[in-house]
Image: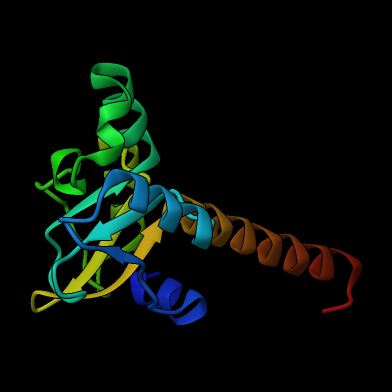
Length: 144
């Protein structure tokens, strides 16, 4: 299975935030969209970074509430690992597990095409297991 298979189901919509937006604005965006991370992008096309709830919590613990008025660029990860739609799901699962990423942007020729979350990966795995279980049950009971 490829990342393109997941994007085909979930779509390629990506929530982005400008690097100059305040951390407080970021929190509003995350809450509004009920997501845990946003891609940092000046133009909505190029990935300048990624920022998550965890990044906010760590910055708050280190610097206090002043973080809320700082730009997102002050807390964002700028060395972002990306994948392509042709990336194998197993490789992305491994990357996410080994590097402890929960979100990975999908990029084609430098253009942002989607984001895959650990939740998307788990949902896909559950769907695969359910299909396999159903097929095995049908085989065993002769309903196939």
